[in-house]
Length: 162
Image 1 (cartoon, one colour):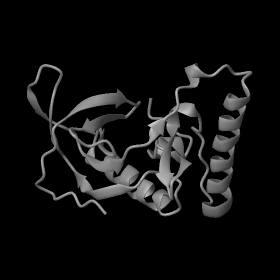
Image 2 (cartoon, rainbow, N blue to C red):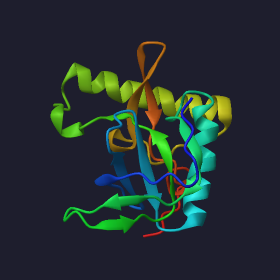
Image 3 (cartoon, rainbow, N blue to C red):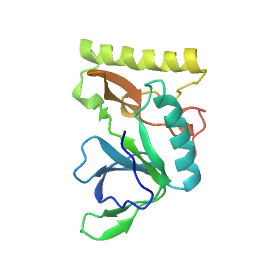
Image 4 (cartoon, rainbow, N blue to C red):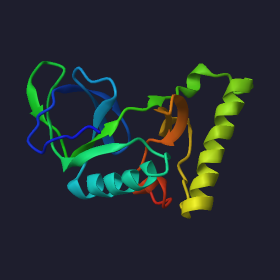
């Protein structure tokens, strides 16, 4: 298990932006990244929820605690992130790569529906914002497992802040 010390400073580049998050690929680390949020409260809520889902292989693993990291911006200037946490990197799905009439697209859609149904059935959680952009694959025992990568409460309670 990877342990991230509270004082460790990672250097990485922002890679992807969600509605409420920025994801940093950590320098020289292919399997972990840092997900930051607009506030410590939002980061802690997402961390706690993701940690709970990860226990059932329904989300990527999380490491350490909610904190801030240092990173280099696109100009090479050292910056400080918002509050966030270190998480396992999931291979995301680009919906644009698939023709909606394609059998592979249908198979992935079925996997997403199954993940949503399992969350509802086993954990009593409704994954309202369940789509290609909010899921990805992680390795478990040598196999790809579909997981939820958007663990902000807006994806689960149906209330959006925008």
